Length: 321
Image (cartoon, rainbow, N blue to C red; front, side):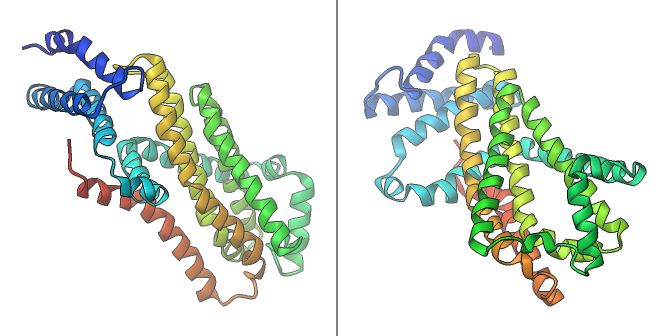
């Protein structure tokens, strides 16, 4: 049977499945189980005869949603937060892994743009960071503490203010994705250009390592989290622009639900980064090199493992539908 005939033959049934999944049609557990069996049969057929088709992706998603509705245990309900971080988010990240690749490629490309711009345009750093900040940093460098700006304010006050600001930036990276991803790109571009030019500025002043020790104690998780939040924004935008086999509204609902979970998962890392910036970064110059390097590498390894490695581990351990 040709794929188009297969779709035409089962289209009404699949639409009924969507109604059941999204709560527009009430089904008891037995009916849901019957729907699941039918859907798995259709999925198996599609995997056999149309293995690289979008129909397989569509049916696999429907099957996974019905599976979750039927087999979600009481234990998972009681440990909802643990399940969210341990299983749910990693599986979503795995499903959208290409957007993770896009976000990181874009991050490195735009940071490189910031570096090149700062190198060949002496006014670029001042344009991006502002004269006041640049002049203050130059004074700090002369005084022997390039990252003295992190010593301003109290520990707790800095922690709260920095964390709220970082959450705000992350929220903008994500929510602006509703404009087809263009808004997310704009905020992402601003932050990446700033980072690239900022780091090159310290390199020009001969204090690159001192800046790395200070900035990346908290920056490893803070910047990584912004990349993930931007990934979520791109997913949100793509759900509107590219609905695939779904209606545009259902595509948006799915994209919003999944991307919002990815966005929420960054909160612990953003808060931890704020804590490090408020309480630890200010002592980076006084720290032993090995200790500051350990903090940077440990925090980078932690967030990298969760988003880059752990999703593949969870996916491998999860029975495929």
